[in-house]
Image 1: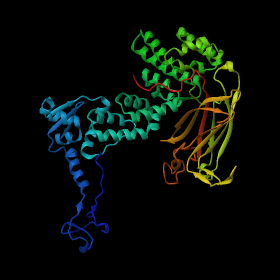
Image 2 (image 1 turned 180 degrees about the vertical axis):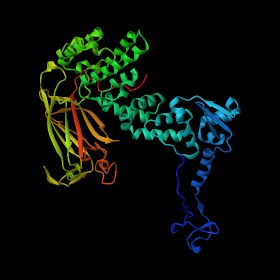
Image 3 (image 1 turned 90 degrees about the vertical axis):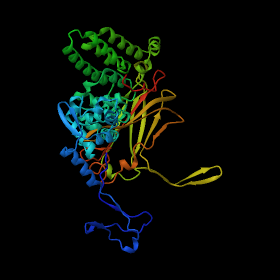
Image 4 (image 1 turned 30 degrees about the vertical axis):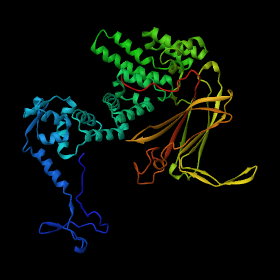
Length: 519
């Protein structure tokens, strides 16, 4: 974007004692208030870019001296070849290369989608003024045009806007559109931000009408991710059912013979639902599902895999492990059900003294499979949201006493301790830390930190340092939204919410997710 400059006069280089000149005039000539003794050369640099920019924008507003007319969806936009070529590499090739017929034409018809055609005038005006208004509805058409005509500065502005307003896009039913377009055109920064929002707030997104706009391959790729946050696997299954019901209605309205397509869709997405992660009772409930009755052969097989896991049938499990992606079936996601997680809330956060901690104790099951029994592990979680202070102490060693000075860590730390890794001699688990926040008025999971760790008698503590930016969490009044950190929620924006998920990892589990992509 052309940068908006204020009018200023810069002193000559090498004279650091020059004062800032005043905008006074004598006989129409700007003059400085600097004494003549300090300005022997009389040189000054004048910045009148605002006025020049205004003159250029007038060319578009008044439609004067135009030498080309762009026609989009029946509307005419008089323009100037020089401005078009200077702003867009595509227009430069189109209008200056003799091999292109458009280079010889005074009227050029452009084919644009309806959404792009409706804002084409604003897009063209940007070439002259460096200004354009965008919101959650118009940013996509603007980005489409900026991509098509290779207007790099405008592309960056759109990308920056989208990265900041992901939550707003979700609330306004635009997130899936943003994700799928940026995936297709390689805008990795926005695609990653959209992907994270969907993965970490899957049920929230599933409650929006936009969820049903997922393309099957994109949804399937999401369902393969290990860091997908849901209440439990049954909740995920219900979200997928909702998507399939919408596809059924869509296909039925287009083609009476749609059942083959529908069966393909069911298999494409449901094969990534992890039925072994459902409880035996939940698996039994699926027998009554209309979807199970319609596609009985597929679902009975998947449910049988789940029951084999819970009953410890090793031969059947080994068969599944040999299949592509088989290990994912036995890998837990980030489940927020009480069986695997707990919520730690720090209320009245601004009044919490420095270096103070919040502690909770909770239990989680030590195994995913029912045949292993009801054994649990007990965990102690300490959260240090305002830094860690190690007091001075004395260490007694064989040479004598050594003084260890006090130390202060400017970090947001979360410490997880396995109180007792029994009944097994060690406990290999996945620990997920989910941090909620508010952006664009939407409370959601904003940050996820995940780590695989093996707790044992000699290693009972796992520390997460720099869980959040210390300064961003402990921002002073007057900074951020309403003077608060985006990671503080509640009516008064004074509550820090951290969800801790601890799920056991067996030798059957996969520790990595397949790459996320739209094939």
